Image 1 (tube, rainbow, N blue to C red):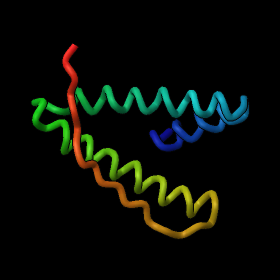
Image 2 (cartoon, helix red, strand yellow):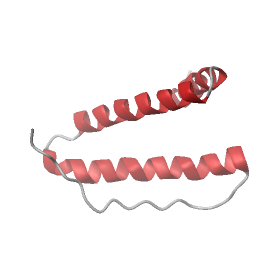
Image 3 (cartoon, one colour):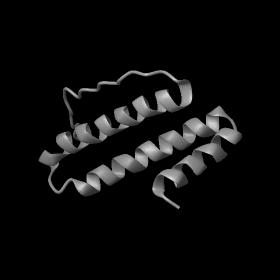
Length: 88
């Protein structure tokens, strides 16, 4: 089973349980994606570019999803202007 098919299956199951479960799944997947982005960035300086590239791919997925699920053609353009780190 491909990764995309697996994620689609998870979303189908979550949506069958209602919109709150589907939203919770998206939030969990977003957090997991963030964790994986930090694993891939070998140095902190690489984080803004890697995060920006990942967000652009999410926008590409939204564009494709709008066509597939809603029949609406368009492009979603995303630009990240800054990343700030707060010290604890």
